[in-house]
Length: 508
Image 1 (cartoon, rainbow, N blue to C red):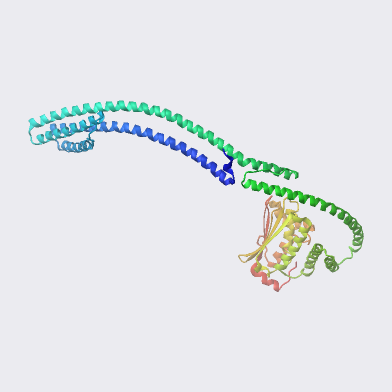
Image 2 (cartoon, helix red, strand yellow):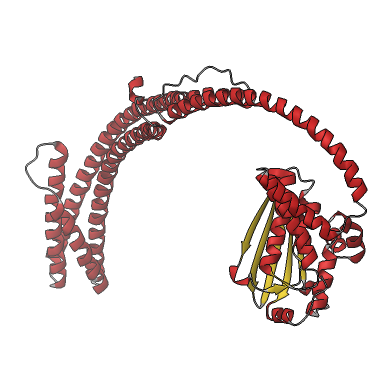
């Protein structure tokens, strides 16, 4: 097959061409088989219709004579009515016989049968009329003449049937021979179509998959870290060709990037070695200094020190370190200044964001933090430090030992007179016993040492229960967790009790 067919042809067009050729082959085979079957059926239909027509004609003649005889012997009105019915049917069939000038023996015999039926109808009609007129000598003569004509008709019909039978036999032999030939031709066409279809399937499949296989082999080498590969030579002029060119360009770019990274790595390694030496010395000094001050340091002094460190880092141009220290200072400030007073949801959310920022600095891209918060709720007052312990619990118990990338969703919305605060993670999940243990006082007390604030889930539940005067824990918190499917914690705060926060203090 000429390869120019595929010049500038996309994969979609190649597949369309293949399916069209396959469909065309199937269509040709089906049409040929249908046409031959129609020819055979038409021939058989002609033979059978001739037999049926002559046989019906003979039966109608016999029935006519039977009804005439019944009437002549019984003079019954029923017999007379049946006679006229049969008479009319036979007359219609006789009139339908083609009596044009034809010279083949079959047509001549059929014309003679038609004329004899005309005479038969006349004679039987005379016999019936004579019987009705009580002229016995005439109806007997006409009836006798009718029987003679009936015998002639029967003789002609039998001869014509014999001739049709002989012709049918000859035609059947011819049809049988044709059917045998047609069967061979059909088998040949089907086998040829199957072989051609197999060839086209292999040909199209090979042309479509060969470049993809070559490209996949090169991709496997790249995945194994072997960038010293030859360019992929694909000249199919389709989408795979475009993909191969882009792949070759990508390999060249990656190779140049790797070389550049190696050069930078050497320089950075030397700088890191020098920095490590300096840090080691500073660390020894700081460690000694910290140990001497650790027991004396006061919270406000530590907070002021963190602020000073953040300003110093900013002055030195260490923006990331400055932001990191500032976030820690904000956490510390929140604990110092918001212990005994309610806060807005906006302040709680900022507190959680500061905490998650510190986690992301520690663990990098291992954790994603996603928020979906109704902005109309940001000024609502709530007890302080109720969201961060839930988020921290999601990290400690769900994501810290997770091998895949972790996600924590924080959703805040108003539903049915409730403020719903949802903390959802994709961590390792918990069994029912673990969920019950999480909200129990004993387990929570034993595990809060891992929390940055020293506040556990039970502490949050207890403070919310006391503040909102709700005894049933299920009205405050809902936990849904499954092993390997993560955990969802929902805090349910009464929407219409938020105003109480303006008049009372919350023990946070």
